[in-house]
Image (cartoon, rainbow, N blue to C red):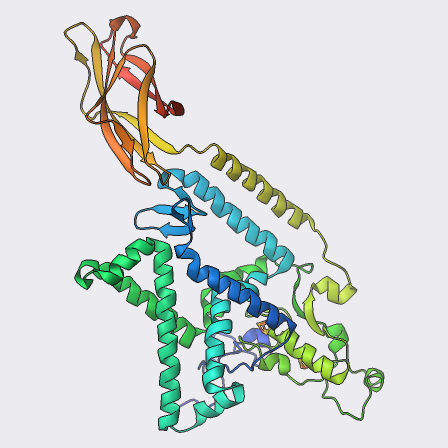
Length: 484
Ligand code: SF4
Ligand code: SF4
């Protein structure tokens, strides 16, 4: 049996043992046996925390109200992968708009690259739903019920009593209820609020699939916020890993000013900072407050690390310490490596210019695609298996199938006109009316005089009109006899 504290490594193993004195060689949240070390980050307060709190209220309001906000009758955002229907800022996108969607995705990825290259993981600390919900909702509930970190540790170590059981059950009941709310909000972004209300109000037997997803999403969010927590950022989210390929020495990150802070040593009240300087000591008094508040359990004084979600808690904690000991704030601050080493301000590097150029180009392309996007998408195909027919008056006819996708949220009555060559076009059945956000399919009969027909195949041009305005031009072929 392995003794605690010794690495699980055999001398004949080809794998190098972890160097436990090097922070890069092991996880801050696992012990030598690989067991998870549960984190109890200390409560934080300060100017960044206050700003993040205000922003979080705005983001949470947007997140939960999002599915109910309507623009021109359409939801603000909808990602209905089941029906392959997407709505962004009230604009409906169909699979036919895939190019536009791909460009929008490229813009999204490029803007992340530009943003990360310049400002590091600002998104993670300030706006990522995982951080906002974990730090501003679930963590605060935990502090409210179980107290600050030292009380939480004591509660965890205490024997099970009725009081401890009530606290734990109460906390997990609230966490589960919140996870249900978050899961349903996500579901509303996927299937829409109308469909979600149907699932909730109809007989459960009619919505087994929807209810399954409801339970699944609830359990996933409960697991993330009650159990996985920082592991969702350090193990699951690819962004943290990907950032190392984008950051450089000019990127603004949450950084410890080691030039000013080192050598770190505890501070004696009898000692002035001039005396500390003379003794080769820096402003860091090794109080570890920055480590105590970190929700991912790392020590920012070791340098930029993949686990750092740039939540700014360590900045606030260190600023409070600096204020207490009468030293300038900002020993831990937003800065670049060059800023800390050479006092350089944010530089616009060729890489940043390149990313920005690509971003502007893609945005212009998207603007062009959106601007020239038609309200309808029509396809005109010759009816399967049909060739041509000779009419009693000597004219020839071809049968076609027309399919119209309406990309708007209003009904569109359509008219089809044969534009070239001259001939007759008849819609078989009722008039074509494309339903909002839906599609309609019907058959067309085109008759041509042999005088305007070419041998074999004659090019055909059909105009699609709505209220007298041309929306699209369709091209197809009219099949006739060959003049051999
Ligand atoms: S909070 Fe500031 S002074 Fe204290 S250990 Fe961290 S960096 Fe040093
Ligand atoms: S090192 Fe600082 S900014 Fe990074 S996660 Fe920890 S507390 Fe937040």
